Image 1 (tube, rainbow, N blue to C red):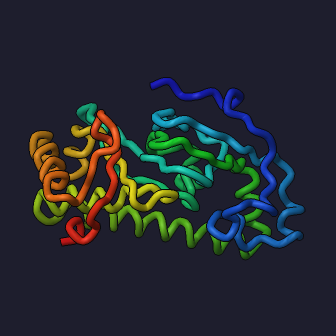
Image 2 (cartoon, rainbow, N blue to C red):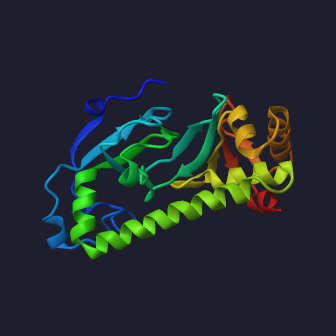
Length: 233
């Protein structure tokens, strides 16, 4: 996949003070004095589904706050296989590791149409040094990212094959449409859940047959959650 050019995704300078999800994102606790420290533009960017936002190992110009949609983080193993390590939702921060290394350690790919704010690293470093509120917020986001990564592995790699597939269906619910869930390609799901591709396909078919899910497209990627209790059993 070819990364999108930042210039082609440009939407203009973000108005952080009036952000619709400001209470969820990185600048939630900043006051007017803190905003006066922001001297570099914070960009509003949009990416279509399946578009690469940044690549693994890429030099980082900034962090990204996810305002809308879902993003998957992908890493390449030593033998060349790609593994999905986590899925991000609105309010999450992409690329926190760049604060320490100035590089991204995963590839970020839009699962749905997404909207993000790109915040220059210079802005983050300046605010972190001069604003206790920002420093605390960064620590909270970092801790949450670690917890989410641990929970992702713990919840999706244990239990029966049915429980793993059902658990993924619940985790992949659309934030804007909680009765709708989206799956990855079957081989991606197999790698994530430590299951064979045939097993993944069989369990999804069983969930549809049992009335837990109903397909919404011909590709078998989007489903309506018909019975959440069956998915949680």
